[in-house]
Length: 255
Image: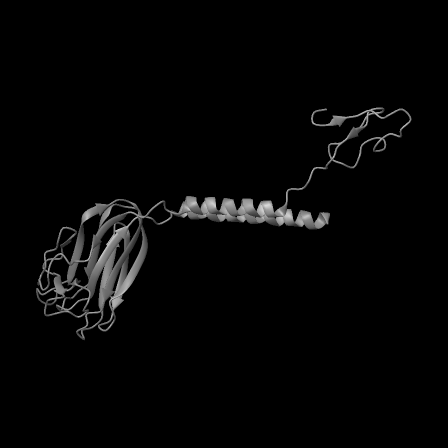
């Protein structure tokens, strides 16, 4: 028998270990040829199962998390000095809302409502009232279906005008944000999914009154875990938990 040491008794010595099968797993003897095993098969320690569970959870998290977030678009609008009324755009965005328009205002100009933020965009330009949309910025680049993270600064018009509504869209994704006149320039983060290709758009809903919400520091990046990855991770955690509970119950029953 492989892995089992054999020994023969001296004449007259009693058999070692009794007769028949012993209580040790994997130990047996035949008449006249006792078998000795120095140790029994030990249960896998619970702490080792815990370590395995932790390693499995980390592996699942790594599978679900993005390898790295790639920035696809970034614009702080500082390349052009303010003020530029009815601004046509830059290398990243184009004003696409004629007869509505947008204005580039901020540092160095007559309309610096948020000092310290450089140049920024008033999403309701200076082409007159009554236009719908009031103004719109559209990215020059087109983005395919997928998951994205979009961050930007959006603030109120700061001129006592009624609240403004800004629509943010990319492909099949769309949402609206409302800003009152005195709302601060604050960060908005959107984790979005689009099933179709499209351009990134910021559209100020009309009718225009030449006073709109303020937009700045737009960044679009990849890196949102896909729903299937999150599902895989949750299933994995559930399986690991069930394994640990079963192992713990067996240990308590044996005690």
